[in-house]
Amino acid sequence: MTSSARRPTVLEGRVWVLRDGDGHVIDDIDTDMIFHNAHLAVTRLEEMGQYALGNLAGYEDFPSRVGSGDLILAGHNFGAGSSRQQAVDCFVALGVTLLMAESFGAIYKRNAINAGFPIMAAEDLTELRDPDGGPLVRSGDRLRVDLASGKVVHLESGTEHHARPMSGVQLDIYHAGSLFAFGAAG
Amino acid sequence: MGQTVIEKIIAAHAGRKAVHPGEIVWIDLDVRSARDFGGANVVGHLRRHFGAQPVADPRRTAFTFDCVVPANTIPYAENQHTCRSFARETGVGLYDVDAGIGSHVMIEQGLALPGTTVVGTDSHLNLLGAVGCFGQGMGDTDIAFGFATGRTWFEVPETIRVDVRGELRPPATAKDLTLALVGQLGSKGALGQAVELYGEAVDKLTLAERVTLCSMATEMGAIVALVRPSPEVLAFLSRRAGHPVAAPAWADEGAGYARTEVLEIDRLRPMISLPGSPSKVVSVADVAGTPVDSVFVGSCTNGRLHDFAQLARGLRGRRVAPGVMAKAVPATREVMTALLEQGLVEALHAAGVIVSNAGCGGCASGQIGMTGKGEVQISTSNRNFRGKQGMGETYLASPLTAAVSAAAGRITEPRRADA
Image 1 (cartoon, one colour):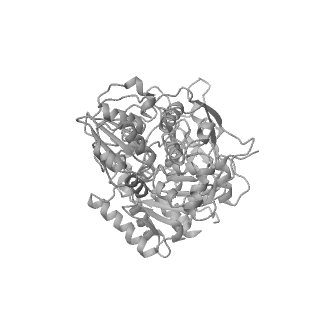
Image 2 (cartoon, one colour; image 1 turned 180 degrees about the vertical axis):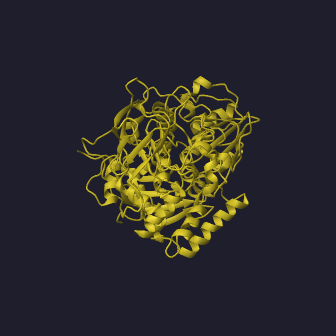
Image 3 (cartoon, rainbow over the protein chains, first blue to last red; image 1 turned 120 degrees about the vertical axis):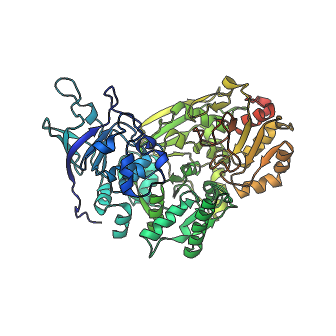
């Protein structure tokens, strides 16, 4: 499978850092917080966006505030729990282009990769501090992320950081559009 | 550097000499399967995306119906028939509603062998680690891709080494050892990692006991828990496969482990998981006396002949206490045959136990009855999340603890004489 780079590998956008009321990055956001099981019968992608993070305290209005091209940064074990594909697709429906987290639930990670949706492990972005001791990366800041090299530029400060680059297989599926499209082509 | 078992299995299936944790590689899948849960979605994906040639190799592909068998809802009946029709059309194998739990059927049929890769739509398919096989549960997209292409991508996991020290002494059983391990590691203790289990007590476990031990890898977040096959296990598998099954390549000296855990079992007493979380594990003695409404023995964790023999032994000729519902569900048709031959169906029936046909009933889908709000159940299965087996309070324990608790009508710690 050749990667003809039909989709961009450098993404730039406004980031949402999923923190709780005390400013701590939220760990263990499970698939019921991302896309509650009350909406499991929803099968049309365009109807899924309205439920994204609808069961995560403080983010109930996320779908009305997020913009196409935005990025998300979360804590450990993002997407723990069930295998529901909607927990990935709801972000695709809203135009979110990249999901970074300190770590992911194993099945969630496979589902995202198979849907051709970029996700990257970013172990320390949430821990970075600004000169005043506050978090460096805040919701609303702009990031430029290179999916293939893992380079992350925080545009507000001009500083350069690193996330774990997407693997070759992950990039191949991303360029193809999905595991099925990749399989059909390969 | 030396390789761990999972690294060797993945490397061998990726055409590589060695692989390293964190790498994503394409691997060949020796057996691909789907249950009646997820199977119809797999067929849907195949028809939409791989219409011309939906199955790479029908001889290495199978449906295993076990979730709701026989179907007692129209949607399940339709889903099963979608799979059945697809199997007839394509020549894919079919273990229909009479066969039993897919993972167990694949061991009995000699399909899951040491060092091989087997995938399916069952999150406990990794219990195949009991025969040194890399079994993996996946979503329906993944499995459809596996049916059509015979391969999938996989991220090489890190490995945790667990050294079990001491001897397993009655009345502690393999299930108590398993619960102690889950309690020690916790629900995320092995998140995304493989586990290798070692120790004299592990070496001595029978195949059925190994299945019990490896069936709760998922409850520790693990990809798979692997046990090195004993000569007895290899002899069994050779008979079932119809050809000699050799000892698989195992971990090298100096293999790289993420960490080593030591589990001391010399003084292990019968253990029990508190309702709501498999990893909240305490001694049975800590909750002894709690009144029990229902008892379930079965599931992919404790559904073998050995487990029902333990149930019968623990009852010691007594009847189940008045007001207690007791249910037994063999894992497979083969187990049911053995129960009949050994007179265990009669013995359990006489003791007031409801004995059902083989399958996942009692754990998945609640086919042999759900729990109502406030109902207290002791189950030998692997999961007790709220709502999983009904709205009641479900404790997880061994068949022996289930037996003595059923006889007493309250949670009871088995004694040595019960074992």
